[in-house]
Length: 280
Image 1 (tube, helix red, strand yellow):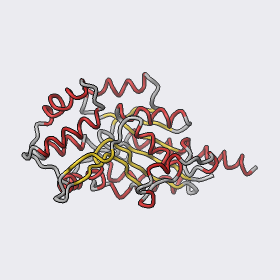
Image 2 (cartoon, one colour):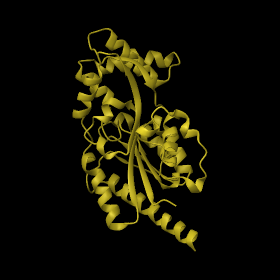
Image 3 (cartoon, helix red, strand yellow):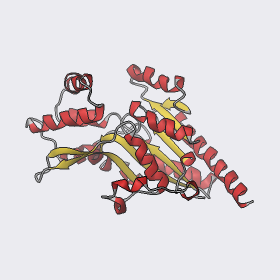
């Protein structure tokens, strides 16, 4: 039995305001028009939201007025704004766990429908054991050429199994079917009842449900400044999707950090009980 607790985060509107909209705005794109007049008609035509926005980014780049490159995505990621306290969150949680539950090891993962190039360049990227997100193939000059990975809705749950089975890092590049390898529950590196998933939106619902049904903790967050999205967030409570719903504020004494610490404590105590029972 492993003494590992995995905390898995979404990125956009969870740890930071929507990074794709921020990137497009940095290029001078009318973001409201992009989503309403470019992406929404594709959704009405039956497209999945994630390939729809990636496709429209490709069209935008190929039109030449706002060429999108690996370098421009990474440059935006390095300057991407984060929600209050996000930079210090990881060290704060590790310090808490070390003091209160020294036998426990915390690991952090990122599973997002955003763009990997942006996320890997973000100021908090170094805190994550692994990052899974949408990826582009790039032309020799660096321009985006085609989506080579799409992470949407139930696609996100795939990466919970990567965490559970310990399938992460460069050693598994080019081995997409390794996640299907059967692993006995007792041999899992991080069982899902030792996971905490933090997200904000509809693409997170399958992960909320999977983690919660397995005995883990699902925490929904919302942006205080976006009242237009409060109804969606409250829906997660009404539908029993999440264990808790709190503002996306990671400052030291915030409700969200308290919730994360309480979740770590609850899982740590459960691990201790299971270990005692197993050994006894």
